[in-house]
Image (cartoon, rainbow over all chains, first blue to last red):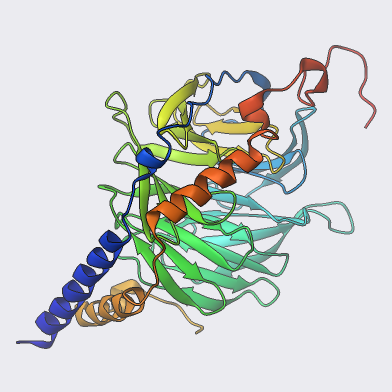
Length: 340
Length: 75
């Protein structure tokens, strides 16, 4: 037997053992466990604000931490920092490359980052001495597009890329601290755990991976989706992972059971999921789809309890503010909307 | 582990080794019973739901995003 065949056989054997180990702990299903729980009431959110200013498709948005500010990125070549309470633009940052696919707000509020088809992650200092917002660092090493980025602090950021890897960067020196390799397809999205010790990535190999940031290892791999995973997020307490895919479903995976708890799907929904965000308690899952809508799911009962219809094109990004007071949607129609 | 990483440079053999090594790590995981996970999941949701604005709604006069009707806003 050749080395290749032997390796494949060994891996398949181990995968079968993992499948068996997962079956052993299946003493119930979430569906059975919530049988006695009432469905959450119909959720009807209203658009409270419309953020107007971008001149082209919006690809990403990210709320600041403990604030009503958010940042958005559009292929009009701008990052805009918004005060969502007044709809004022706090900063309008022109980008070197207009092919932006992601943006992020640092937890401190001092920086924002973005990246895209330039394969780089650019860090901007919002609190420069002369008041001008300038590029602070350009993190270059990925050999594919930058699909997502998230700050751990003002000195570290994690990126995911079309080159199938994720990277932890030292912003100060502009160099890679750790490379997380293992996905066999483009990495499309990432999310950091509430305690900042782990992160999860979703990829075009249809899997989600849980990574230990300091140990630099992949702890767990979650399968089940039948197409690319475009969106990923942590359940608020950090013990479960939510994914959204081109296969038109969202899935909830429990980290301790190491398997899927439930799939959020409806025969009437046939288009891909582009973005997702849980509400503050995790009772609701808000997910954006290619058909211009956001569906709101009861996360316990796995039933749709509302729809946000208000955009004239694909909803590309969604986020819930850190105090859970509002949800923001961004769209290819160039507008952001604030709902509650 | 600095330097450019290029997945294209990894041979099929390298990738197969990586996959095998990864599964060796994952097979050792201690898994919790689903019943325990489901119970904790339900409890976590119920614990926070009363403070969850998107679930409970918010009174117009308490909504920070309410419409600003004319006048000036002093920040």
